[in-house]
Length: 208
Length: 208
Image (tube, rainbow over all chains, first blue to last red):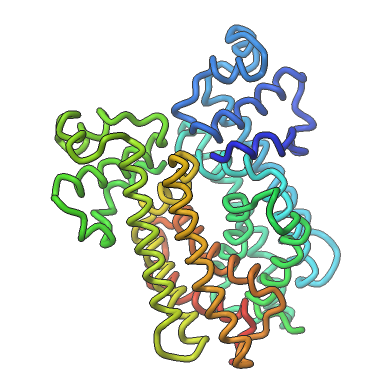
């Protein structure tokens, strides 16, 4: 999508644990290829070439292009879910936990906007069983944010008429950072995270 | 992207004025093809076939695939800009104008989510001069929302530390509706618009 993005984004932190190194390199190559031309216009040959490997070497790690998209999507969603469940289960008031969730979630979508775009926009290309697994992870992410909002309402700290819709809106605001964030723009990922934490607290009517 | 979307969305209201009828049919066919497979994986032959026309008949109206994307993008952005500038220049308090802008902008992104996704996610495929024209329209959209927020701050109705960042956030919240909106889901476009108008007023710290 944006040609510059590929040069400003290294291997996402979320993929540190992907081994062996060749598998991780293929995931990185696939993300950049999908982001530039879309999933359907990308061939496994394109991906192997970007990773400096042969199609046969790719096949050792991933049997199909869809398998690569699935791994990218799964690792990305796992990382997002860890952030949100960590915030839900962490210490602090509901307001502190919501602010923490938003800061970390925004930072991830800004720093890894190329990966996040692939993860968010190519869901329709997943095979049925893979899509079901990713959908379950997305529901869990929604649920983690909803739980923090519910905690705040119960504690009398938040004032929210539509808890489900407001939780979706907070997550949506964070996710869309991946679409518009420009690493050469006026705000750093941390600055956007800080602004958005404040906006999210206003959205839930947090006192203060 | 989602296979069901294509059946729930007719010709966008924004394209009423596209003539002749064949040109409008080709735009609709192109949107659905781009949404399903991505711009780069779609051929002009695919688009002509969906519209029940020959590639030669397509060529009478659009010289290239990029020309079709550009027309889709231009009409979509023109419609969005009309909504936002209409709200900026309309009657009412800044709070009323912001709520009006958000309601109408959300409704458009929900009702025409397939078109909106193509408009929002395929910008990178536009030719340089077309991209420059669309970027100018996007800046004008940002500016219209920013002007409403500035009016509210000047009037003492809004409490906003970062006017530019907050205006971007309000627009971003609306745009992302196109990503997640499901016409078979629990909320209608009007219901999401109403919820989001309230959330936007909270984001700008509107009294009340």
